[in-house]
Image 1 (tube, rainbow, N blue to C red):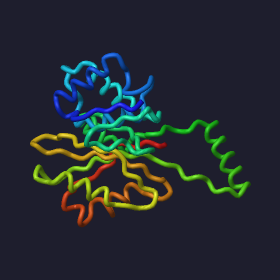
Image 2 (image 1 turned 30 degrees about the vertical axis):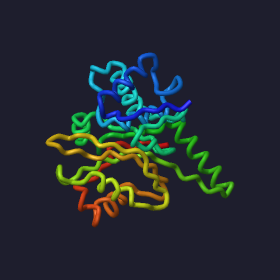
Image 3 (image 1 turned 180 degrees about the vertical axis):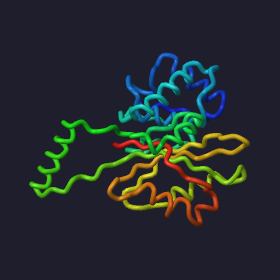
Length: 231
């Protein structure tokens, strides 16, 4: 059964969400799903402690997304004025801005996926040999990426900025949910999810050659990979 919310940026909208979550751990069902991600993405910031249930739920979903992602389909949720999360577009969102700033300096030193064990390497080699022997082409993998896009100043039209970003089309690229996040002094940045086919899309090339060049750079000061999750 689909659930509907509206005006989550208002006190009345947050109160409705808070009341709804009084007896529930998730938006629909008994596990985190894309319904939770849709509502999470529709909120520009974490609900205040005044909304105890909504705040608890928000931080729980935030932690789940950062740790492991969310893949369950859910039962369906609609939010007035906000598009649902596109299929396969659930990415791992960032921690708070302060945490992200601390992590930026260590990006080059962090192994996001860990090292393969000797057994895993042998298994991978065996699978590769089997594929080669059978003459079958290895299936391309997919990744879910959260981009962090900063405008030039507080006068930048964020609606046009997002339209410019979404206007970029290429094979193997699917745009997903987005939200505006305050960064201070009246400036907001855009966080937008995308799903890519690894063999078809290079994220670095996409940023350097499509998302930060004319005419998009009229709105975009910088574009960075904020989170990356293999699907």
